[in-house]
Length: 188
Image 1: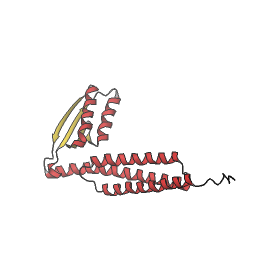
Image 2 (image 1 turned 90 degrees about the horizontal axis):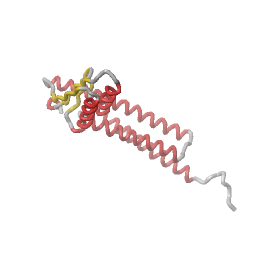
Image 3 (image 1 turned 60 degrees about the vertical axis):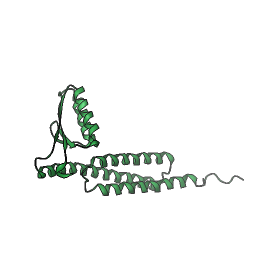
Image 4 (image 1 turned 30 degrees about the vertical axis):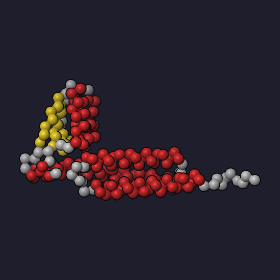
C-alpha cells in the first residue's frame, strides 16, 4: 500500500464522567485495530475492514454526549507514510506475538491433558472451544494486518500446528472411549 495509503484519523472528545463511555469507545477502537496516536486521536487504514468499528466508535461517542471528527489523511511525504505504516505494522506484530504465546499455552494444556490421560468428551469439547477461539482471533488479526507483518506467516503455521495437535488429542479421546473397560470383567 505504501505512500498511496489513505488513513482515517478519528479525533474523539468525551466528558470525563462517567468513564464507562471513554472505556467503551477506547475498547471499540482497540478491538478494530486502530492505532492510538495520543489522547483521543486514533488512526486506521481507510479500508473496509475498519469501517464498521470506526463507525461504531463514532456512534458511541455521540450517544455519550461527546464529539468526534473523522478525517481522511495520508503521509505528507513517502517517509512519513512509511513511518506510519511501520507504526501500524508494529501494533500488528504485538498482536501476533500475543497470539503465538496463546498458541503455546494451548499446546501446553493439551500436553497436560495427555500426560494426565484426561480423555473425556467434556475435555475434548473444552479444547475444541479453545481452538475455535484461536481461529477467530487469527482471522481477526489477519483481517487487520493490511500491510503484512513479518511474523504473520509463522503465526499461521503455529495455528496449523495447534489444529494438528487437537486432531491427535481427538484421536486419543476416541481411542480411550472405545477401549474395552477392564473393570467390567467377562459377561459369561
